[in-house]
Image (cartoon, rainbow, N blue to C red; front, side, top):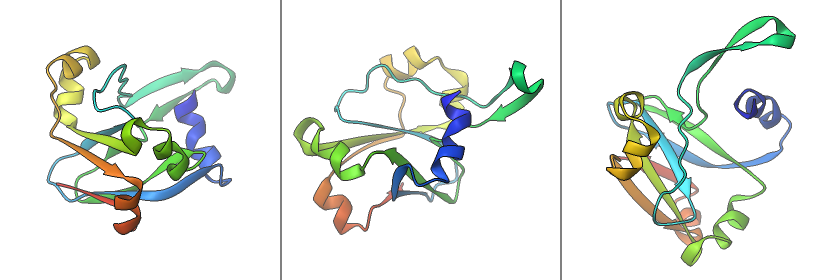
Length: 138
């Protein structure tokens, strides 16, 4: 339900949307950000159709952390990005990039156990400010 409501809430300025993720690669990707160097308890929301009883209709969902190849996406943080990063381990945010094919063909547990990411990045608040809150892959 949170995935369905997120775009609705974003329109009302309920989050900090200054962080932009550019996917300049030739693959569709998923990203996960964390306060910890080791990724734990990751849950990928894969595209699917869900039946909503009270609407008597189905809804198609796509994860807000999915970014198509050669495109950009604003990554919205409830609260503020600076506040989130200041509470992180070593005042850093860690971002892991996963190919769409990995996410669709492996379980969350396998992805974490085998560390099947394309790239891991880490940024301090100052580094993100210096980059004008833009992160680029690859």
